[in-house]
Length: 534
Image (tube, rainbow, N blue to C red; front, top):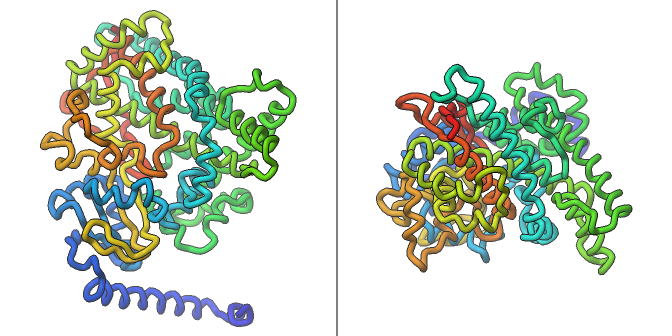
């Protein structure tokens, strides 16, 4: 075999690639037209050679396009992936339950190319692993997300949120006419506050990006997050179809030659990803070494409550009790925290920004919320999460925003076996798209006003109503977000503090959201809002 490979000339390789593409085209044409069990499902127009509908779905306006297709063609669609493969799109809760159910979600893991792409950005963590490895890692992570540990982290949240409030206050006060407020692009400031919280919660690391934009860890995350877009993520997915690209993209070899990516067309994004993740990983490894030393030298009562410290302590205690217990390696431990930090801070920043947008558009809802939260937040009060969790209208506002504006717009799974999803026979290997926003706003579940932001709906839910497969903002089944409670805590603390101190209005008449979608949604214009002191 090696002799054959050495004998290959560039022209031979080009011929082999051409023959493979021709084979995929002919096979795909015959299969999807005459043999495929999915051939009778509605198929939207606009499929492109080689990439199918993928470039459209992963474009900056992909979520809006999916909504148009579902409105026009129905809640179950066939679309085309790269090289004439067939993908299934589902929306109905009963179909979602089959794919993301507690007992079936391991039978429908994320497709390999998606897991590889996520691993490049988030590390080898819960977002990119599946099966037994996912179960073991999730179990190992549980202590870091216990109620007691989250309560111990409350101070991190207030420090960052109060820092954000101070900056907004200074900008409003220094404006020409403070009574008229000041228009501020809110998203970047919220993103920095969220990153400061996550750095403290993840590593016990004080980034203070609100006041120090040049902190190395914060700067690397800033570059990584701001490079995200639908087209860039599509490039990364296409790259994962080439063998060896995952290892290359995370390698120090590529980092040392990253300037090449400035020369090669269309690869600038890959340099940002490689450089940012290399820097983040190196800092994380140093912090892990520090936490490991602390676990040896400090008494347990003095150990910190950040996720990495808890994981180090939990690993140490587990191995002391049972030397054969599952041992999470240093490399994987770093990747777990990277997954949590990269995914967590972006998602909460996006959601909090959306909360302020919807409240700016609905002054009655905003006034009602201010009336509820002010008594518990006045002065420098720092009520714990148990108090905020009991505020009904605050909960309605947060949950409704999560429902209509999920930070991650799309989930993808793959059938590990030929199986029925409802009455649809799905061949093994079929990729299944689940548009989260469409599921969350499905009229069959939420009524005719499903697409409208209406916090009051959460006051009147039927007693037997289940969110399991009708509300996917934190996913479902075995993939349910482990950091859900931490995210809700951050959202409620930040919303309550900001609404107590400021009013929010649209920046101008006729303002609409200007967003793009990639791995997550982002605000193209930074979301300017007119902010006034209460």
